[in-house]
Length: 291
Image (cartoon, rainbow, N blue to C red; front, side, top):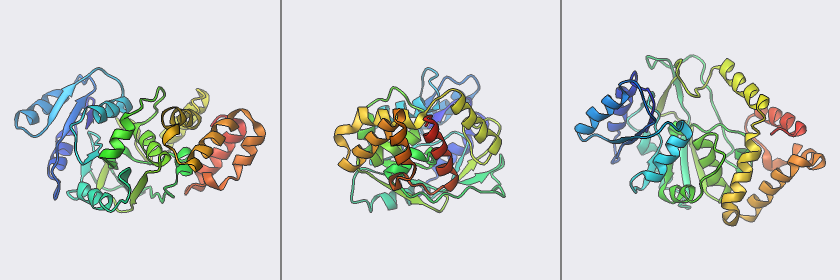
């Protein structure tokens, strides 16, 4: 769990994690320099033997989670937790049951979320995703919810082998790495988590104003996150990629400075996504060379 000034909902989330059924849970928390009573709450739970925690310098949520993944005790599986959600008691067991079916040790699980208000009442308008779970889609469509992710030990080791210089969000990066090197992703259409929406959400879902604000910001600052992520994947994992994934990544990168190559990618079925709206926005960014 990564925390930062999360005193308002922290106890409820910790309690929901400790109440998980059918699995043994070791809860490790890295605080990102909170100035409220978050650390007092963590100390109280730690004194009872319920969790382990430490405080670090403020590095932001993505790096906070990546540091946790590097420093966590060895385990069979690793799950990310936000500080303000609520987990149903079968959340981790549902993930483990699917991951145990994997023929490939490089695997991760994620699920649908139930968007909820501050009192955990489900919101009337939910966001339903139906991902294709392909590597090409992962380069284009950034939909995965880190708060639902569970990954195997082998994938954790693979992720920790390379530290990207450009990291936008930990969950998107780990998902891309998994599929890039031939891992398998499992999606659970049934939500096992109440994803609390409130004014202090770092990302959040369902708020179209915030979503468009982020999109405009990315364009204004020319972040070109997809392209830079592809560069990082080549830098860190080219030798581990299946030939087809390596070729797609190289085509994706080369097209950045070649209009004809970008035009070929416009209808490339390898980059198909489950979101028509996302596909349209990507094609526009592709034409403009700002993807």
